[in-house]
Each structure stands twice: as C-alpha cells, then as structure tokens.
Length: 265
Image (cartoon, rainbow, N blue to C red; front, top):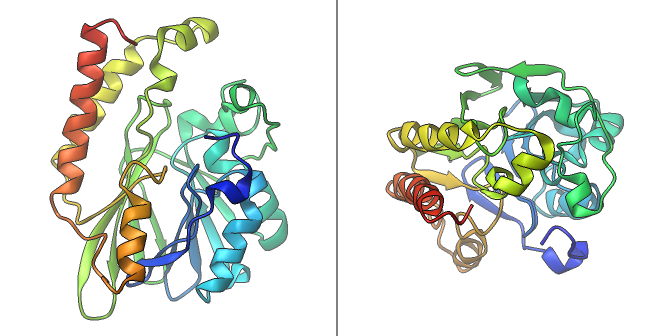
C-alpha cells in the first residue's frame, strides 16, 4: 500500500468530531487537533503525500501556518516522512517516543524506508517522550502512553475532543502492524523477539483505558473510509463508539498470540 501513487490513496477530509479532523490518506492517516491556540498534527504521513494533506487542511479551513506541533506515533517513514518539510515551512515542534529517536534521524536503518523503496528525509525530534508524558497546547492535553511492540518507541495518545456541547475521549494507537515482528525482519536486523511480548502487554494495558473515538494511524484499522462516508452523509457521531477501542485491542493481541502459536510470524 505504501507504493501507491498518492492520488490513489486519496480520502475526503472530514471533521471526526468537534475540534478533531482527518486530513490524511488511505496508506497513512494524518489527524489535526485545533486547540484554539494553534494546530497539532498527529503523524505527518509520507513525503510524497504532503500535498494531499495540505490540500485537505485548506478544504477544512485549517491554516497550515497555524501548525505548532507534530506528534508522531512511531518512527516509520509512512508516519513521519513529511515532517522535515513541515518543520522547514512552518517551524513546527516535533514529538516522538524516545526509543525511536534514531529511526527518524537515520542513525539506524529501521525507518522502513528501504522496505518501501523510499528515501528517508531525516530530522531530530525536539521532544523525546516517555510513558505518561503530557503534551499541552491551548485547550488540549495529550497523554502519551508507551506501547512498544511495532517499534520500541511506539506511543499511543489519549486526549479529549469537544464541539462545545459534548466531550469525548479520543485515542490514537501507536502502531498495530505485525510486519516488524516477523522472524525474517527481526533476524535481518538483529532485533529481539521480546518485542512480541511487549506488544501483547501493550494491547492488554490499552484495552482497559477509556476511549470513545478510536483513531488508527492507517485508515483500515478503524474503518476510516466507511466512517467518513457516514460523516459526509450527515452523521456527526460516526466515529463515536465507546466499545470499539477495547474490542480492537483485544482482537489484535489475540491475533498475534495465535499467529505465534501457529508459527505464522
């Protein structure tokens, strides 16, 4: 999916709920929080899809010049490939889970750029996050929750969104993919198999956390296209489901456990 032409992964942008927006693409999701004192971007996406993200922001009345923070779920190129360009254009401050710092600056060849046939545009994260850290801007406070597995520095983020009348708890998962936990990948780079145990523990922990709006960093994880269609048809609460998060955390955990038992990973 990462090798799609950008326009082949286009999705209509939409308001997820209140001050939270989807402006990304099918291959890699990008969300925007309007804090009232500037914009927070959650994952910047591929460098070759940046024009779509900026176009979608303009369509929703979100001025890219008001971007203040870029918060990353993890250090793979599909979630941070466009970051350096945005930093150069708008002076954004960048946030990343500390264990992934050498993924994004190119010290370690683990950004998944080689696997996707892309060239990394490296950057140094301004703020390196650890479990429980808070990111605050305007009316928004984001809690970072360390959820290693997909990468050692994968971070999930929890925050409130509001339309002025109702408030919901949103959560963005740090990384659901099992591709980096396959034996072939771990062996190639000399990485520990314990990342699988880390992922299982992460999902178990996350399942018990409150979430009304489940956000994936890939559109298929939380059925983003289907929900966007409902929003565009007039359903302002298409993304609201207080049970989806727990259900998906448990399902992804159990899926990995079964794959390991069946030696399919």
